[in-house]
Amino acid sequence: MSTLMKDIPGGRGFKPKREGSADILGANSEIGRKLKEYYNDLVSTDVPDRFADLLSRLEQTEKADQPSDKKD
Amino acid sequence: MSSDGGFKGDLLKAIPSLRAFGMSLSQNADKADDLVQETLVKAWDKQSSFQPGTNLKAWLFTILRNEFYSQMRKRGREVQDSDGIMTGRLAVHPAQHGMLDLKDFRAALETLPEDQREAIILIGASGFSYEEAAEICGCAVGTIKSRVNRARTKLQEILNISGEADFGPDAIASQVMGSSAA
Image (cartoon, rainbow over all chains, first blue to last red; front, side, top):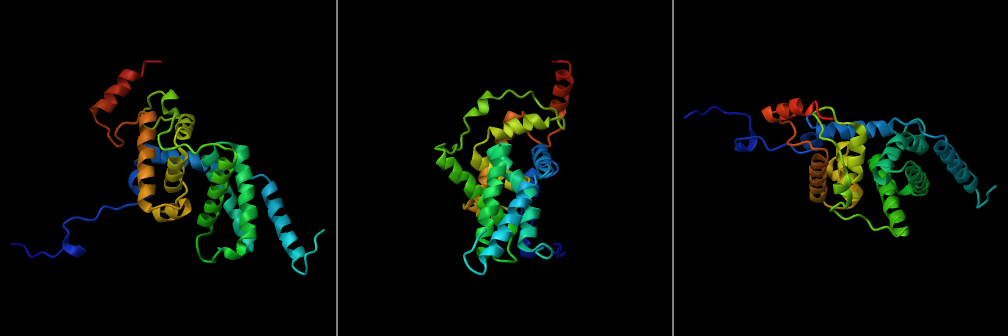
């Protein structure tokens, strides 16, 4: 009988199945790849200026609000 | 993360992924941008309730998602339930491995019920863990897992991708025989 010790904790005999997005939607998955392509396509579209403008306005309103309730 | 531009800078950095998530949910560019705008305003107002050091992106996605569902409810539109109605209507040609068109994929994605679509996007594209996705969607981790599985199965059906990673003789034969068909 072999007493060869393997560094498997718990002695389950096999590794627990790894779970995570890599599993079923990883690089070997056509769906996974397309999903990323679809999403990256969306992420890389140009962001309109209105969002930066909006944040600047929010920031200014906040500053203006600090002393009292005054607004422009 | 919040070094240079502070909270505002962090929000700015998050905009591209917020827009992508908004697009994935609403399938409409204008609606997506409205969602992002609302999200930014709400995030700004609730700034003090964000705990620094926690995941800002997940926090923002949660706000956007809530906004999306509350807008849908306001419009009186029923949230699609899990058996997607339009699945059968879509005609997509059998995809060959690696030849799947992005347009077809987008159309297929659109047929999924929202809950499944958001789950598969959060996990498969936005890079969230199952735990984070569960938190964003306000449901159990197991629920996210089953939604992702159902979404994936449905996409495979629609796109005719049978048994992924299965490059057996059948797959090759059907490619050869299908190649001359219009």
